[in-house]
Length: 310
Ligand code: FAD
Image (cartoon, rainbow, N blue to C red; front, side):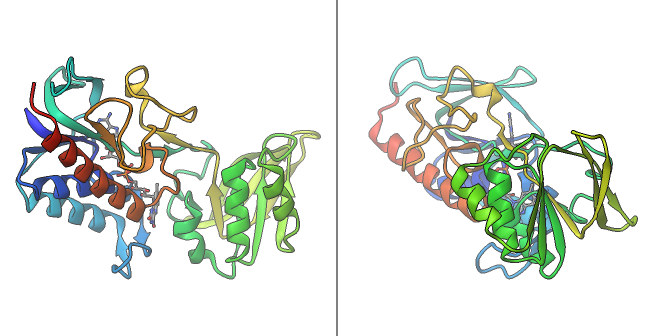
């Protein structure tokens, strides 16, 4: 039985592991892919104190930091189910895809999230070569250039407003016949001089020169005409999906599927904490996930010292 069993090995899970292990308690971490989203990231320039690094290098450093302590790392393992303790102070059961069952006196969920893809030709080919998902992360790479934002919901319109202050020009491409973002955001967007909006516009291809993005093709859904925009970057903003499907019915989730946590990272299930992109905590960023992971570990420790084992 682990004192703290962590599910997910991204920045949140790694930080939780280091904080828990430093209390001298039995700590385990199960991860489908240690490093999480940072493995898919090219450059990271906003983790404070690290001026610049690459995603895979950052992921390796997360793992090295956890390995510097007595942490049982179970990488390449996917969790399929969580069962709350039968009584206060009892153990929480975590079942893996392969059927193995792990027990924790406390559990930290840090399974992160994934960006929805538009699934058009060019998207996968030019990912990190002009195709981006995070304006806070990659906006400054396009300073003085033209970009498009696919998606006119809240996240797309927020991204477009944000990018308009950083890049030369932003085109918003929305599939539906109107922007779905809050009116206050839409009004703000429309007030900006360097923004163009296309609605009823279905992106059909992201084009490139073989090395990097050079444009986007969309179809006008009203008249079927095809349009090509010359661009240096395309931000895909059609939704971020938390990796919490396996928790449905056990842990309380928001309507977006995010794990609902309080200020200490506690969920509605006793002894179960959560951190990072999988939770309701706003702004999905590495430094925020890491901070929340540290917080969840300290909360789990606090729970353990107050709860006699059943
Ligand atoms: P994740 O990093 O998503 O990690 C989740 C972990 O849980 C992984 O180990 C995963 O394998 C595991 N997992 C999921 N489901 C299960 C399961 N059922 N069983 C077991 N394990 C499971 N942020 C920045 O601050 N700066 C940037 O420059 C930046 N660039 C980005 C670029 C890209 C392309 C992307 C996609 C994201 C970027 N982000 C950036 C966002 C940042 O990567 C995330 O906010 C951060 O990784 C979230 O950390 P996390 O630990 O919550 O989740």
